[in-house]
Length: 191
Image 1 (cartoon, one colour):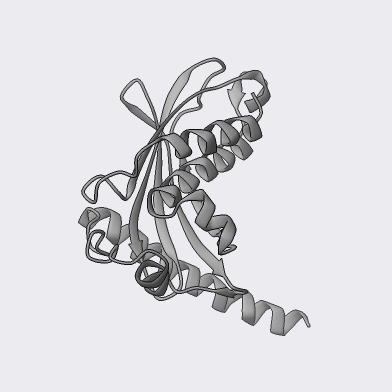
Image 2: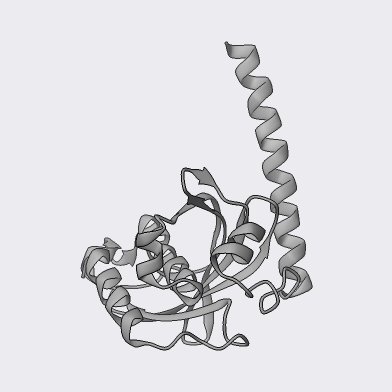
């Protein structure tokens, strides 16, 4: 089943589902089955992991903002970078659960952790750095949470993730800054 069909089902389901309570927000549980269109030979391809994570991010976003508001205000979520650790491959026709959790945000981006879980084992872990474009500019998360989704800042706090997760996010932020500096030096030397 192509991902577009899965997303359409997810959007239809969002019309009929209730918005989760404040204590349930910030985490998404989606169940999937691996179909032949998701596979390279007999395992799920790495490009499909990114596509499934898009479903998790969309589900998280729909917990805070209705689809009609996304369309009306032209809110455009985007992914800046993703760091993935593949523990084990996910096989054809197997079921898995994607757990996506909003773990942190800084002045420009949201950090979301994704776990692909199968039979109680974590098969793949990823952390993505995400932003939101609103009215032609990148909207700071605090502004998005305060203006577009009033009252949410009091319900989801930046430090609600486990300390190990936040330490990993801070490590990735630092590593990205180092890579960007190295890339700038390299580009200066080349050009």
